[in-house]
Amino acid sequence: MSEKGSVSIVAARYVASAVRPDQYPPEELSEIAFIGRSNVGKSSLLNSLSRRHGLARISSTPGKTQTLNFYFLTAKKEEERRDFFLVDLPGYGYARTGQSNRQQWAKFSEEYLQKSPRLKLIFQLIDIRHPPMASDIAVYRWLVEHNLPVMIIATKADKISRMAAVKHVGIIRKGLGMRAADCLLPYSSSKGTGREELLDVIGEILLK
Image (cartoon, rainbow, N blue to C red; front, side):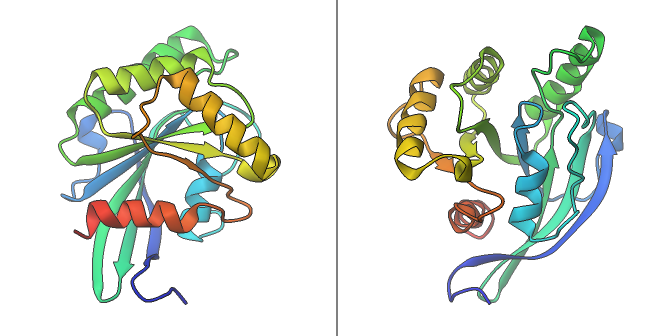
């Protein structure tokens, strides 16, 4: 049971996979996107956020997601509800993926990010255990340069100590060139750390 005033997810289901705009769901709903390196934990975070085990398939093989995957979610705060799409983008930066595939994924991902009129926020996921890689930095700078709303989520926060997490958050901030006011949220899909804070961010966007 959620506390009074907090945001909860009361419905979640997979809707569609797409590589072209004509394949996007037709509903006029707000969209929130997840983007990150292959195996950074996007599917685990989506399952954790929705509390629907198996909603997004978790694969041990990096680069498995090769389409834009749309999920229909309903957020609730007290008596107010709002339906929205959570969009899982293909992972970037997996070296064993063929260059032609990487270019194709980048093309339809960039097309979606630049042209979707309903996109409200992009969560870029980065593994808290490691400094940002060149691909993380390139994607973050691309998002900022295109004036797209982005927030960093540092995944797998349960894998290191709290003291180390504080240090690693600073390393990620410095590596990306983030400003002091820019948001970065440590998150653990297995422990639920950061889940309430992430739901609050979503609620601020959808339930104004």
